[in-house]
Length: 213
Image (cartoon, rainbow, N blue to C red):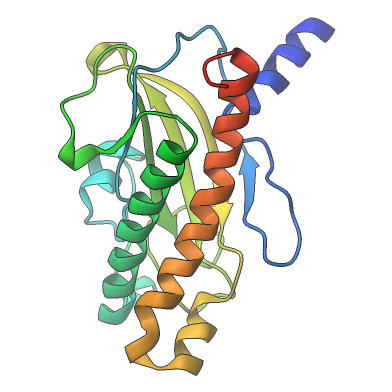
């Protein structure tokens, strides 16, 4: 039993071990570690996180049962616009950070379809009220997202790990203070910090496996 528990802890370290917490740091909380008996991914494909319940990933990717978006949960147009901006910046930053660490990574939309050994990073932004309803919002102190790492394709698709990530700063407050003209630099900076922390943990695991130096 002790060996099994240690095995699960090593699995969590793959992608969702808690990142260094504290001021200015991204936090990533693991919720679902599974089997470690997986081959080295031939590459990693990164998808833009779902911004609203109508997003494709909310319907067919991370959570097929995602819903919401009406009444008090209705999203503002600006939330969706900035959410899409953040999602693209996060994908671009994560692909770049992984490549900088010697890991073959691509934006999924620009890559060949995944194979049996291909890893995929998918996610969706969550509402600020703590629910699991998909929806990017600037009203909370931080932006939260659910992240999943999968491997394979079709009926061979396996969930490797799952967790929740929180951005390191108050994105909404920063945008309000700086004005609309400065939205992209603020979004890009937060996305880069988040991507850097995630890429570091992935690279650490690759090094321990002897897959990269």
